[in-house]
Image (tube, rainbow, N blue to C red):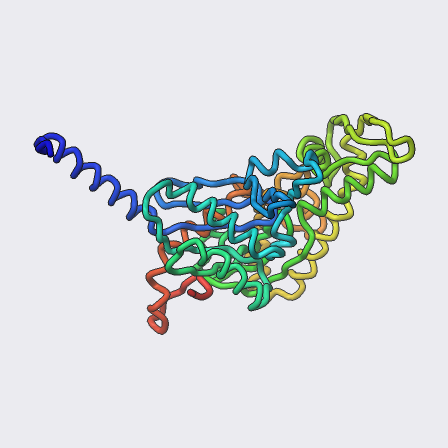
Length: 364
């Protein structure tokens, strides 16, 4: 056996120290398990995973072929042998096995070949049942997680938007995600009033699909609807018209067809969904304590979530509620960034009864 050189030994020790430091950095992680996208946050590294919550399965062998962005590219373009599915519907798990595999894949992608036994803060929608909470915990725990703490999405969204939730001051956050819209009045580290509406980004896509079939007899796919929504979609009139070419299949002839639609037509099919969300915000304000409403009147409403980028959402809610409305910076990542801020409270979960305000719900 050849002797180990002093320089080689020194380099080996440095590598071990570097790996140990990385391992310590990776002991905590925040996960936003969303209907449309899954995001993972690591301390000092930021958001390291931001991929679609999509899984492709081989129908013959029942094996998973692709996960995340690779699977999303297959949506609407699969053969009869493959099925591409979203394993989360309206913010809750609909296929436990696929979610379990998806979370494990993303965590392995983050940890590479190193030992990765993190503590995790996971986001859950508001007003979920105990069964739905347990499903989230079980799907994450199978990936080798040693402790899981839950945080409600409105709380995480408020923290990610830079709001100080621990002051005796009311803040209204509306998180418009892919499957649900969670809205809450936050004060003193907790929720005063909250609502969760199963109406969000995917429902806007469905509204576009139905509109095109009803008006033009054009059958389009989900990706086409989503692209049109992000390109020219709006819930408030635009100052200048914009256009998008919809390509699909004619419902009568079965032949390929292309239709150019304007942003005014997108407004026509999307405004009703937007109005429903605005009415929910208005109804929740009616149930909020007067002192907190006074705070909200002064500070305004904060919009987060990917669908908050839809043109005119702030104007629509402002017109309905008569309150100032602001879209948070980087709204689609506010939830996972807020969950990342919640990582520092994991060690404080055991300090109950000591006057500590903790945004985390429970630990498993």
